[in-house]
Image 1 (cartoon, helix red, strand yellow):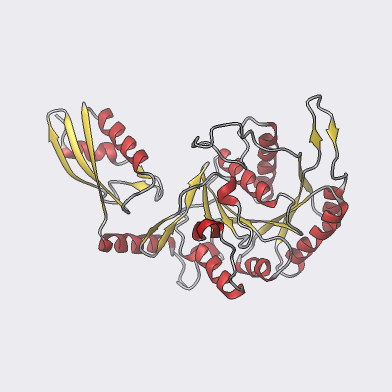
Image 2 (image 1 turned 180 degrees about the vertical axis):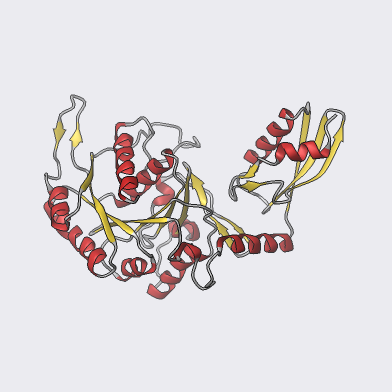
Length: 360
């Protein structure tokens, strides 16, 4: 017959999906009752109505069955306010190794996370599409990746990634939403019904800083920032907030788009001293079924911009869209993310490898 110690041992590798910590370590497994080969236990969730409750239940049941139980009954409860406050303090302490508590750990000079800012001179060139698919490509290569959707007025990352739930809040700590192995934080999570954002600069700056100081990111190899287009105050504030960031400029092949994008590159070099990784040319061509390329927006804009900024043209991404002919209720649905075997996804995989090599 199983013992309580054996049940706990079986569950020590079952993690809370949002915190990526053992349920046993978090003291979320309680009231274990064993009768023969039947096991009943309580799982105390961080919040009532936890969005990942079903996954936690499946993981717990599978682990206990593998340990020898024939029947597993999982009952759910939720932490008290005091327990949540204590957990929030624990998470903050783990995330704050710096001597100066006023500096968020992600922004400390010795932080191991690499920042990659994705910028453009104007809107409509596919900057967010590049951000999302590059992040997913990095995750598919085994990297720990996050996205800050810093395009405050034009946030689109949650919608593009098919994210429908909001972040979990434990005390004063926010847990980012994870999708396709990428942790995401966006202004869109805090706006009701796609309402317009009418905040002014200082309020926006405070919200963005909270994305670094109040969010429990855990360990990240790369944090991508989807910047607002252009060279306005919000973009400049973000640039100055981030230490030693690398930057990718997104443009289309059109000469005018490349001309405007040069301003964003110049700001990164002169105003913030950020290093440019290179240029990504989006919407480079449209390819028909007979594999003939049609250069709808012209040719050469990306290469011209790269030469002007003295960097490499990292990728040319064709015009297209992920295969959206699937059930909208399908959990895998994401209107902006290419499936791994799609030709354009392979273009992003190649881009991700270049980015990794450029930040070694």
